[in-house]
Amino acid sequence: MSSDAPGDPAIVCTLPTYDEAGNIESLTRALLALGPNFEVLVIDDDSPDGTWKLVEAMAREEPRVHLLHRTTDRGRGRAGRDGFVRALEMGAQIVVEMDADQSHRPEYVPELVARLEDDPSVGLVLGSRGVPGGRDAERTPLRRWITLAANAYIRIVLGVSVRDCNSGFRCWRRSTLERIAVAETFSPGPAIVQELLFKTARAGIGIAEVPIAFRNREEGESTLTLRTLFAGYTAVLKLRWTAFRGRL
Ligand SMILES: Nc1nc2c(ncn2[C@@H]2O[C@H](COP(=O)(O)OP(=O)(O)OP(=O)(O)O)[C@@H](O)[C@H]2O)c(=O)[nH]1
Ligand SMILES: [Mg+2]
Image (cartoon, helix red, strand yellow):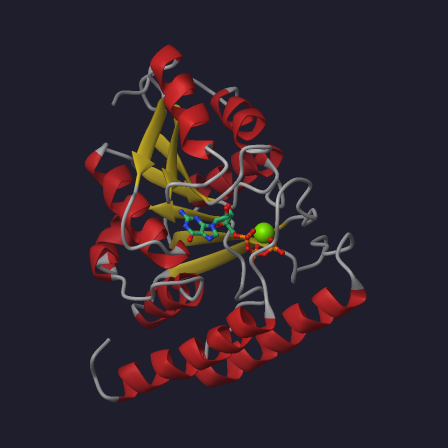
């Protein structure tokens, strides 16, 4: 991959998808419109709604669209890991990670990228609901409360000091992903978000937070259930335990 203007970094936006047929095309188009140095990589776990077919069709027309179609070993974490690895193979200097359900608005991407580019001491930028100017307004009070409680818990258990530990809207410097050995990510599910945050903080890499307004998913089904929530809390404890035993 190459970027057109000299000096523009090669940016790959990675989008894990499961049943996002109603969202993926408009999001992909919005990301491509950000600049010629932007590429989109969709990592789809063989969605029953055929999300991957839509991406395949877009990729035929537009070389900056890429599909990683996974048919085994389904999981948000595994898909995320494979997406990072592929983005690095593609030559990305910066990797933007975001959900494809329109919760993470493409308009914020240039701000996240600029924050990373402006400050060499920062290796990861979070789109954050927890800093002044950030908002979580569209969600139900219960869902917001769950997010707040989860943040407090993660900050205590993992000892990270950022305000939005659950943000999966992030902008990574290539060197950060290499340093935390992203290919060895082990969380099969959504706990990949905390695993990579924890590893980055432990490596002493600078983390910045840029305020974003979180938007509720517009199309498709949420994957959050009580079971996944409980699994998330357990996964964070496991992370702490793994680190305690010197295996992280
Ligand atoms: N490839 C892949 N993507 C997944 C999987 N599960 C979820 N995703 C995607 O990961 C992103 C985040 O999942 P969401 O369903 O939005 O989960 P959430 O943000 O915790 O919950 P809601 O916003 O309430 O839906 C979305 O783009 C999903 O399509 C999976 O098993 N495989
Ligand atoms: Mg979501």
